[in-house]
Image 1: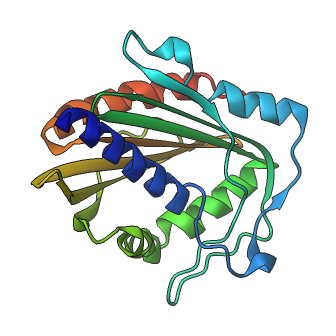
Image 2 (image 1 turned 90 degrees about the vertical axis):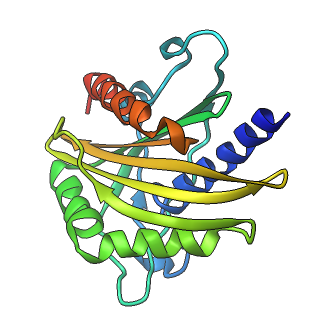
Length: 224
């Protein structure tokens, strides 16, 4: 029972992280949201670049999900411009097994230049990491405590690559459990990919190696 409860809890944490970061959870300042101009070709390209059922073996469940609509990133003293970006394709998928959750998101922008601008504003800017940490800390319920949040090394598998690791202490069934949530961001051509992995902290070394293999596979599917 404890393992099942922990799996469900990790799933909630992973979903919260992705909605906060990959989908830019703050929804104020509507004039600053990226414009949505979805087209069939880029929608197909986005769907091709996320995880699929065939990537997993026995014991995994999940599948494609409806992506969250675009919104804005807003933190004290930091609000990267997004109104000059045009989203032409978007897809999301999430899979889980006992104690492990993987979620992948793909966004296709209208031009490569838009991806470059978005990356420099939302990742390279030194205020970006602090904003992610601030947003996540605000969303945690009283039974969870942010232990650490830091940017970590990740191979440059594409033109743009960055990774973050979050440790959260969770009270589950009267016990204190440490959960690791990794966020990997990569960009190639007009496509931006996000992989969110959540697992018990004891598995942190193993999942780090697995993330490199998963991201490498997803990048090979990028069409746009």
